[in-house]
Amino acid sequence: FIARKRDEGSYLSVLGFGRGNLDDATMQAVAQTGNGQAAYIDTLQEARKVLVDQLSGALFPIAGDVKIQVEWNPATVAEYRLIGYEARALAREDFSNDKVDAGEIGAGHTVTALYEITAPGSPALKNPPLRYGAPATAIEGSGELGHLRLRYKVPGEATSRLVETPILAGRDGQDTDARFAAAIAGFGQILSDDKYLGDWGWDQAIALASDSRGEDAFGYRSEAVGLMRLAKALAGQ
Image (cartoon, rainbow, N blue to C red; front, side, top):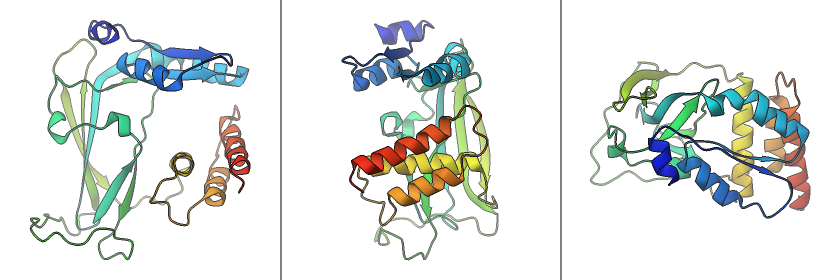
């Protein structure tokens, strides 16, 4: 029913209130099917974030069935993995198939995808060379780390539009938003006991988040750091 209404142009977001028997997995599944958002409102601060700061994004979609595909340049990236988005992964052949449903982006939304990448010849490489794999075509000296392709539909249209751009090297690493996002992604991997974390743990996640809070007008990032410290204490670390 929710999927049918979504196809007719009605989106569904789910907000949980109070401390009753909320089923987070069901909330997420229902909201994802309805091209909406799921949120749990437990404090006045969280209510402000969801119902004031993020409200326009939930009510006014500006792009439908948004799909992102990244191809890495073998000259600079030998291995990679996408962190998160397990519930949103698509088969490679579905990228150009306009019949396959994908996510929506609302007004004012920012979508961040984090990749862990390994350079050729690095001692951190996990996979041995393929015996029968065809050698990848590398673009040497281009400054390209990879290539980004994005497909989206204008609301009300059935055919997607394609946008392409190279991913260039040379960022200085001082982007506080990207650093804070990396800290939160690392926090999530610690909670899920990710097998690729190595020696990276609570102290590194908290330090990275604390150092990259940037301008935090309403204290959302400071609250996140507090939650990380609480989780560390509950884990007995």
